[in-house]
Amino acid sequence: MKNHKWQISSAGYSLVEVTLALLVVAIGLTATFALFPEGLRVTRAAVDNTEIAMFSEYVFTTLDLTAGYHGGDYKVGWDIDDTDDFISLMLSTKADAENFQLKDGKTVQTFYWIPDFYGLYSGNFAGTDMDSQEFEKIDFWTSAFTYTLDIAKKGIGGVPAYAVLKVWPGETKGDDEDARVFYREILPIR
Image (cartoon, rainbow, N blue to C red; front, side, top):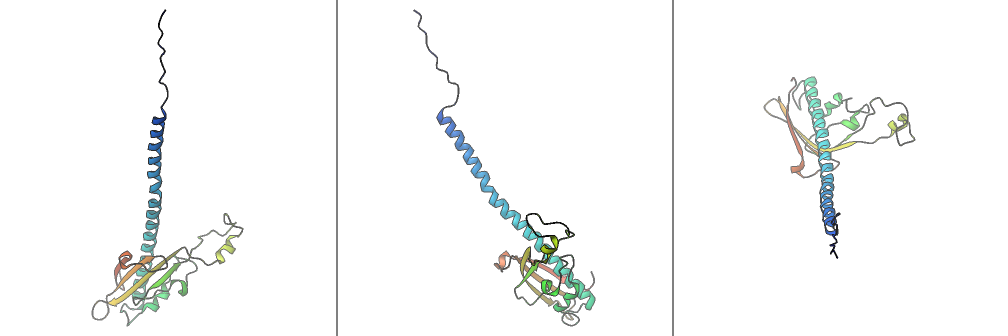
């Protein structure tokens, strides 16, 4: 008689190999999902920095225009209350002194950015039963900044003056090291 040796096929994976493969996949997915909150935080910070930079440009341009229009000499020819003459319609068609008035004197102020609809005047807004005219009547803000603005004379005569603007995202003042600080000399002619 012939002695047949039965060979056992080793096709397929063992339970240990499958478990190790699932462990590697689980660790990889966990690491990937851990990146999402950081990505959201960085995105929010980038949006805040962009909006704050636009706000600071609005503040400094308004101060430059006011200084140029009223003669340039701070506290003699013009004051912070005169900046209402140059409220920007670029920010919103709802621009008025109540929404966009600047205040100085190192006091903490909050600036609310009221949205504009930029020509979206027909049809319904997706997900609502309101048309655009009804939606436009609702007062809400899309961004808020807390800021301090200090304007002072640099030399004798008040020309040039300088402004230091500290801005924090949101409705509350954060730590001073978290502030975005901007400095500009205010010249009546640039």
